Image (cartoon, rainbow, N blue to C red; front, side, top):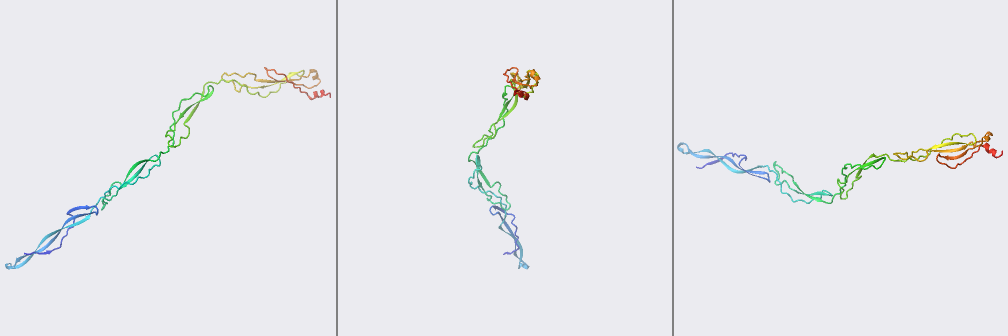
Length: 308
């Protein structure tokens, strides 16, 4: 008995299940092998009627299936490529002294490239290699160290009287020491501290100062018949003054000047003749010099000498 197959509406299922394939990292697509189902009707003949002399048909159903492949996007995480060959060395990063130079190698996040929300590559796309380098020594300028502790006080620079004594502190140009043409430290390596000192009073012998001005003459000791009048000047033993048991000045502190006066006889004096004065010169109590006599006449005496 033959079947009469009458296809009905095929019921295609969405491809959400089945055998999952691997995700293609280059395209970002993954494949599924699915089974699609469809419902098919057919008529099956059978005898019917009186004495079964008629042919009738009844409808029956069967389910058909076939396999198909479907796709959807898949997430692809990025991955690094291999490191590229190292580049050339760069220049030294210092013009003097010890420095460094570098070279680099790179890689790319393309093995595969991230797709459909996949994560990016972690880490750096660059790596660096370092090599020490030195062109020439750098000039180093000198700098002072700290001042050292003060030394002991020296001896007084005077054996008597007021003097001074000193002490010193030093420093060194070694912080750092000048190198390779660097400048030396400026300023002094030593500083001085001083204070007054006094051992004993110095022995100082006295010395005479200059004589002062002459004083006025005294009155004449006689009114006639020859008298004397004197004047004085003085000096001090103060250049310098005796100190510390030093000797006083030798000699006299006073100098006198004596002149004769009223030398005319008392008889001539009664006639109205003038006074005659004789200068005996400077006289000191302990020194004797020849008298220097200066005679001074009044106008009336001069007239008498001329016989007028």
